[in-house]
Amino acid sequence: MSGKLVSLHFPAQPDRLCMVRALVRRAAQFVGCDDELTEQLVIAVNEACMNVIQHAYHDQPTGEMILEIHNNA
Image (cartoon, rainbow, N blue to C red; front, side):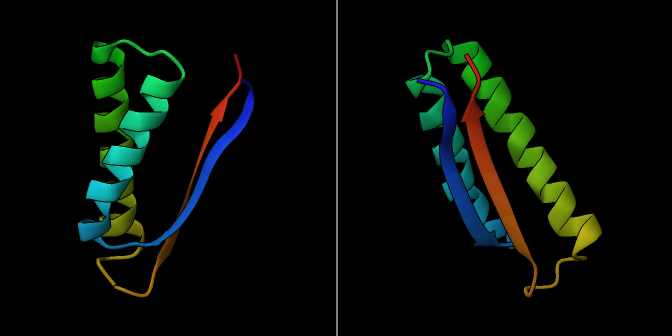
């Protein structure tokens, strides 16, 4: 399966990252990533999102983020 797997719009708030991590984990598993790669992806996406929340939105609750996950295999 190639193409967009998921598109998620969510408030730029740290408490939403639990949902993002779960979604990234499930998408990685769905496309066949092994456990190590899956966890590396989860950590990388979490860190990227947290950086945006802290540095772009300065922890303001009005920001919105969009996460899209594509499978180009």
